[in-house]
Each structure stands twice: as structure tokens, then as C-alpha cells.
Length: 298
Ligand SMILES: Cc1ncc(C[n+]2csc(CCOP(=O)(O)OP(=O)(O)O)c2C)c(N)n1
Ligand SMILES: [Mg+2]
Image (cartoon, rainbow, N blue to C red; front, top):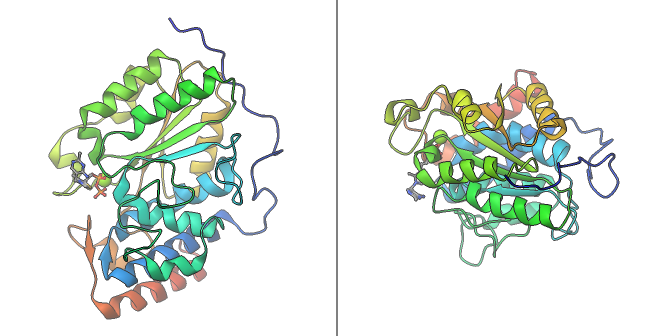
């Protein structure tokens, strides 16, 4: 069996956690991430908006609570890595990077256009803060395994997070990565699965049965948690527990999310994998999001 050091989480905020002590709540961060995503969606008139609205709470917890990073130095060696395996969720990550001050808000207007730093499918070479190019599904876990192993060998205490999706679980390469991570006892690897029960052709649960997912990950030797991915307190607690667990195993936080969370008329739209939105509906969606946020129902 491998004999790598057990991962020692760092003691304090030194050299990371840029938002520790901020008076902007995670709830507000998530709302603003959703708003940035809707504004980008409006530029193209369509897109993977429902995913961005669904995963916004997880991204808010990631960038504003869990990850050690430096917004003004995205290559800082001591950073935690965040690998977006699902390239089509790029709009969600851009929204988080904008909120985190890594990208300027003015980039929103360029979303998906030629020469933009924000292509519709995420490209690491184009976008500061984008750690991998993930458009071809199934590679995030494998890349995270290599990165986590490399960091351990360098005696780094950085974590590698990777976000992948329920539809992506159909890719066999994900499970090869899952096995490899357990074999190497990668306690510096934190997987996040967005279980929104949707994929390109319909509900994921109808395409291929994968439940009980938490038991499957447990059987593969992972430290396993499952939470409501739209419950910020629950996500914070799960990420904290994932980092703090003293077990020589990779960690998974399975997040059940609601597609299009926060914009009710998108939530109920069928086939919301790729939303096509009428021009007037964008402003309606933003207004509804604002209302939902100020009414404290989001
Ligand atoms: C290897 C590969 N096969 C197929 C696709 C096409 N594709 C893009 S997104 C997607 C659905 C993936 O499932 P999921 O991320 O759960 O869908 P969502 O929740 O975004 O609706 C597919 C099949 C791809 N990008 N890469
Ligand atoms: Mg899905």
C-alpha cells in the first residue's frame, strides 16, 4: 500500500482565506453568483443557466469559505485547486470568479463572444482561475488524482477540489479515478458531485441507475457525505468535515441540488439542461431572483 504522509490541514487563515471576516454573507455571495450568471446568459440568449443557479450555493461556500486562494495571484503555489470537470458549467464558475474579484465584472458583457476570456465551455488557457479544460466529460477526477498525488509528493498541504456531475458518472473514467484516489489514500482530494437529477437527455435517474450513490462511494473507500447542496449551512459543515477528517482516504461531498434554484419559472421548465430563454425573460428572471433574495426565501 502507498505510504504517503497523512494530510495535515493548515492551522489558520495565513496565506489564504481572502474573505475570512468579510461581512458579506455566503447567502448574498450565492445570490450575486446567480445574478452574474443570469447577466451572462442574457448576452448569449441561452445556455447552461439552470446548472449555474443550482450550484451557486456550493460555489459560494467553495470560494468564500473553503478554498485557500489569492484572488490577485491565481498561480500562488499554496492555493487549493478547484478543478471544474464539467466544462459546460463554466458560466457558473465565471460567475464565482467574478464575485471573488478574480475576473472583472465588465467581462460579463463579452461572455461567449470571439476573443472573450469567457468561452461557453471552460478553457484553462483562456481564463484566469480556471484550473483545467473540462469540456470532454469524465476527466476531472483523474486529473485531480494526479494533482493531489503530485502535491503530496511535494509535501504541500493544499487540497484539490473537483466538481463533477451526476450525468458524468456514466463515464467509466470517473470510476477509474475514484479507485485510484482510494488506492493512493488521497486525503487531500475533495470530490463534489452535483446531483441535480438532470443530464442532456432527461432525468439522470431515468438514464442509468446509480443510487444509493453514497454507499457506492463508501464501497470504493471514500470518506462520504451527502447534503442538500442548496442548504449553505449544510454545505459549510460538510466541507469543514471533509477537510478535518483524520482518515487516510479521499473525500466526497454528494450535493443534491435543485436545477435553476431561485428562478421559479426556470425551475419548472422541462428539459432545462440547456435553457433557451425569450429576450424579455432575462429581466423577469433577474427581477424574480432579486425579489426572492430580498424576501429571504433564497
Ligand atoms: C465525453 C463527452 N460526452 C458527451 C458530452 C456531451 N455532454 C455535454 S453536457 C452532457 C450532460 C452531462 O450530464 P450532467 O452534467 O449531469 O448534465 P446537466 O446536469 O448539466 O444537465 C453531455 C452528455 C461531452 N461533453 N463529453
Ligand atoms: Mg446533472
